[in-house]
Image 1: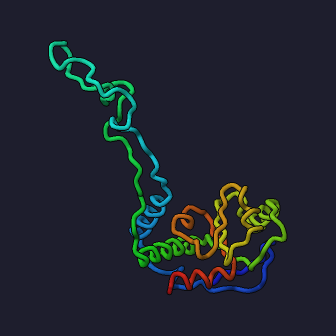
Image 2 (image 1 turned 120 degrees about the vertical axis):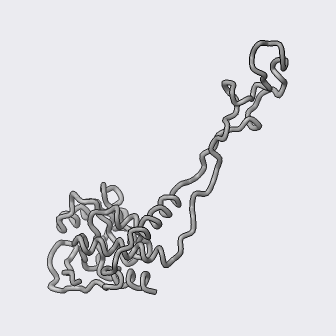
Image 3 (image 1 turned 30 degrees about the vertical axis):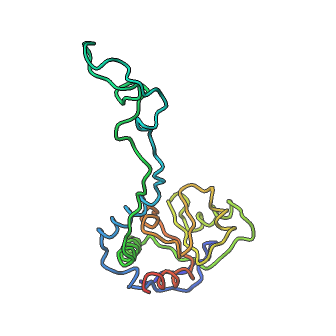
Length: 209
């Protein structure tokens, strides 16, 4: 599949670039996508939720009433979970939600996501660029030049560029990453993918190594 390469100003360069069929033209695997997205979202969870059990509540450990003869249910100390202010039964505890996913499955998922974008004609390739200074206005001009001002976009750069990242940081519905950070969730979450020309080679090397 060939795509026209344009400048970040929106002007045509007159050049085309070919997308690798091994990365952008495979048979998509939906189950691999599901597993990779599930893994990505699980890894974002802090897992720091915590509630106190009865052995962590401060309070007297004295039995509050005699066992029998009161007409009510037996009761232990004030930290009993059935009393107000008592410990919580089976409450949440800190845990790690992440789980391991094989590299081949992750690569297949990413290639499947990129293939879907290619089939939907939702990929734009622009010449490598950089901003002289962080300016949100410049980033908005880039999106406008590509007619993507109202779309959710993902810009993939070959290397990290502080000025470009800072320029796009406050723009809604857009994200800037490097080729080495590309992942299934971000690709599918974006309506349109903007690839810097040099990032294509890095993506190919990353997913076909």
